Amino acid sequence: MVEYLIDRRGGLSPYLQIIEQTKRALRLGVLQPGDQLPTAREVVEATAINPNTVLKAYRELEREGLVESRRGVGTFVRKSLAKPPTVEDSVLRVDLADWIARARDAGLEREDVAALVDTALDRAYPTSTEAPEESG
Image: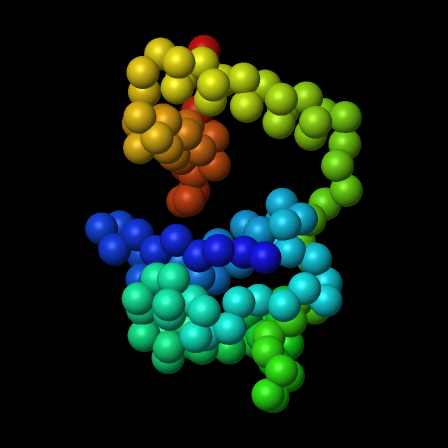
């Protein structure tokens, strides 16, 4: 089951954080078709956000065809976003885990590592018509 972590200091609204975290869990295979999402009450107890915020996020996920609500029962995953693992994928995951371990061992905090990764992602996957930067 997925556990939502809400960052109140970030610029992303809680409902969008729930959507993004659910999609990430679907991409990583943490959530599979048929799995039940936490109830709104469980999310509220864990995150102290408004229940309507949770329901709004779940409605958006349902609109996108990723989950389905069953009245009186809960919200269930309909569709996975996970791609079948490849050899390249596995090598990249190992390399990334090694890099993160080295960063931690070098004394970088989680936020520092996240900032480095975000910067690298922004360069590799620009959001506008900019061309990706070449790596050195």
